[in-house]
Image (cartoon, rainbow, N blue to C red):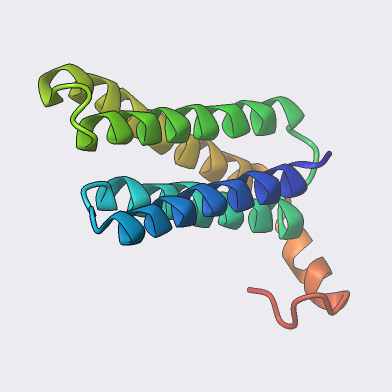
Length: 141
């Protein structure tokens, strides 16, 4: 499975988790996990979907090891962040114990963004015009 498809599957999985949490909060009238809900949808769904689009339209397969590392780093950071937020806002683990874990998770997600930037910068700029010529997305930057 290519990374564009892997990211799409993960993005949709995060969407299911985030929306399910939102429905649970609405049904229970307890919105204590709204921060977790927002992070699952933004960092999980939206960012993963954007990474999938980047892989599909711009990245080539010249750096497969970096692509794999970036994929793993992003999801390890994201899942750790979501679990930490669930524990924090669920009142299961005190803030002073979970905040260091959340800090590391946030930095890990940032490292994933920096690795994606590296992949984009190292990919031939000829990929974007090629996608536009094929007519898949209209005019591409």
